[in-house]
Amino acid sequence: MKPIHIIIAFLLIPLSSYGQTHQMGFNFEGGVSYGLHQINTDNSAIKVNPGSSFQLNLHTTYFISPYIGVGSGVSFGWNNAQLSLEGYQEDVPAVDSEGEAYILQITAQSLEDHVRISNLSIPVFLSLAYPISDGNISLFGNLGVTFNLPMATNYQLKNGTVTSRGWYPQYELILKDIPAHGLHENRDNWNYKSDLETQAHFNALLELGLKYKIPGASVMSLSIFAQKGLTAFHQNELEMVDEDGAFPLMNEVEQYNGIINQSTKSTSLIYGIKIGVNFPASSL
Image (cartoon, rainbow, N blue to C red; front, side):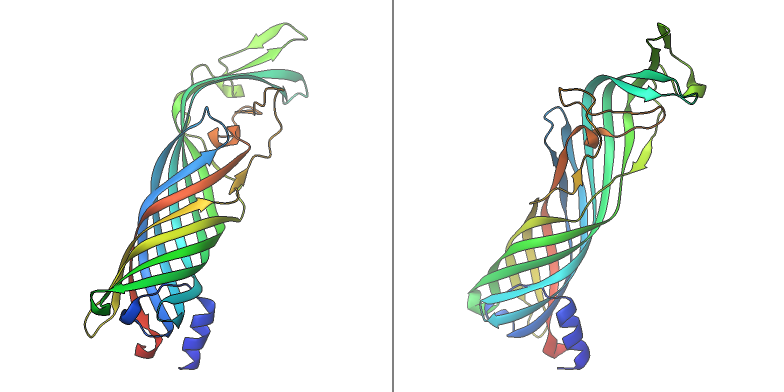
């Protein structure tokens, strides 16, 4: 094996296994995954609609027997999801530009946010295979974990109405409908967008599929997979507004904290299909 093959193998080590359709030792795999991405929160008032998930996968495999492989790899993923909140009402302590304390009164209806998350993932897993059809076709299963490092994440308010008013109890005064000062009545054209604070996290990985040996060529794979969050990718750092556990939808005018921050933590669930092409190191 050439030195470059050894370097690549130790940088990218995933797995897969397929009876007589492969050679023991290192094998390389490239492919794509497509499916759905769902966000799970601990707030039952938040409704979630899964969005699309797309991944580019580059893996290498080391087979320790004809039926067992171990390893890791690297994937780049782009995930979307829709979060909705039917209603929200809260009074949030705030301070205006003159240093005066007041209460920011917020009322919102039919909110819908679009959440986008892109990350780099490194899977580490065990693969078992069972050859059928004279070894040209194999059933296989992968089980392991993925380490996910977020690269770019954001949320954007797509639909809904938001009313914000300033209540000064010391003067028995309520200010409203003053757009120049960020106070709006039934604002429905606010296309607010902001980065989302996320963190590295782990997902459990399960993959089941078939591999087919193309005579005189490579091995094709087709599988279904699921990745379920073991740890949170986002944890709310906002302070609660009251003892009921409510978080501020806005803690100052013109700043929208997003639906996802109405929960204390969020995990992800990704599932779909995966297509790959496999090459033994000896053929490179």
